[in-house]
Image (tube, rainbow, N blue to C red; front, side):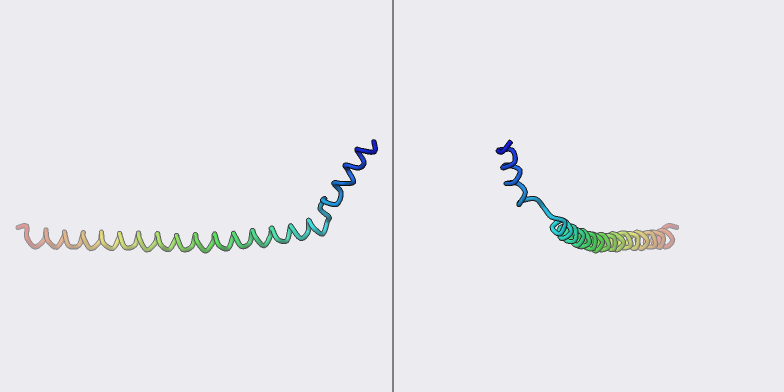
Length: 77
């Protein structure tokens, strides 16, 4: 029984207190907020990159269609 109590008493100093857990919770919340803001920033950046790419492709397609229409209207008679 004494050895069991001695082992338990040896473990007690390494157990976390409520203050330790509260401090850890605060650090975790700040880390999560940091990750969320970084993720939001990166997703916004990627979204605008995709919008620019698609709008550029649509502009090129529109110009190609206008050029093809002009060519057909002018040179096919």
